[in-house]
Amino acid sequence: VQLQASGGGLVQAGESLRLSCASSGSTSYRYRFGWFRQVAGKEREVVAAISWSGLSRFYADSVQGRFTISRDNSEDTVHLQMHSLKPEDTAVYYCAADPTIHPNTVKTSASYIHWGQGTQVTVSS
Image 1: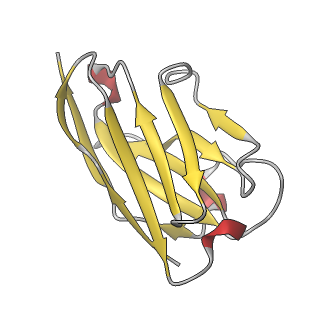
Image 2 (image 1 turned 180 degrees about the horizontal axis):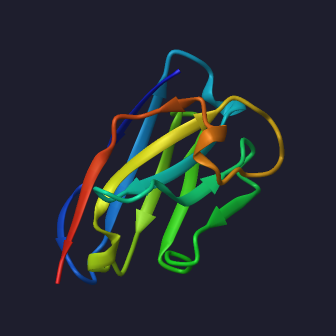
């Protein structure tokens, strides 16, 4: 499956952005997805994850209550709605897919097989 992330941009603190991850090349409803972010010189960290059914979701403590991950299987798309953005949210955001119907989410980047190209999110103070 190929993943295409989009929706990044430059916003001011407190504003919102919606990232999208469009998948193609395979039926994505049997995949679980994750959003990760990375700042230059630092390790990639998980932001949010969603199971193949959408019933299980995970959020990093730093984004809990501000970000929402969702999926639209009819359009093979996963979204990350980000509200109340902070300068520390600035990073390149990546979506990733793991081909499994396991009911739980997965938080480790090594568990994901497919990765998108990343989209830059910059939050100014």
